[in-house]
Image (cartoon, rainbow, N blue to C red; front, side, top):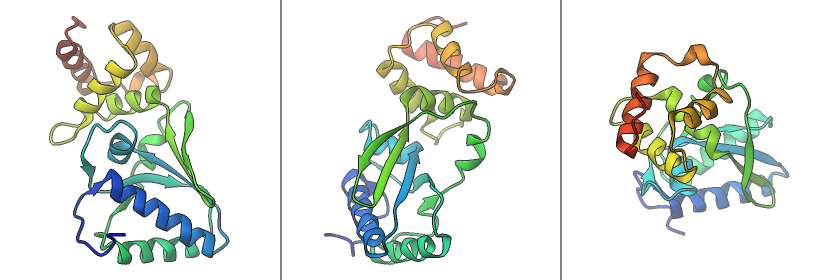
Length: 188
């Protein structure tokens, strides 16, 4: 294990090492945990769309908070991770989601790593519609290709099954227009 290297960014192999270590720590403490990953971590692990991510955007299932905090601090120390390596800010946009559809990505003995369905992630990327250097646009482009989204109607139907219509403002509408243009479709 290369845990003692200064990793800076977390590539797929490093993320797998971290998940393995978390599982071992959970097992040693007789604790079961679900971790739902989003954003860059998911694009790195699931879609191989990024070489690495700077943090793990995730939410945890209900757990012994003090024990989990201790395990996360140990993980941070062992892997020389910066503060903020666990990013739970995703909780805020998740409050806007109409429904959450999760799938199991990987199951360990004491850790289950979940991910949202690609459709949900695409809707969340459109809702976020952050400017560069955010990777939302590139991620949405890849997800549209993966899901074979070729019309504005398909994309809007998908979005509105996860996001309330009033949440789409000018930023999201422009994002959708540019996305269609980059995909080679006229979504005006």
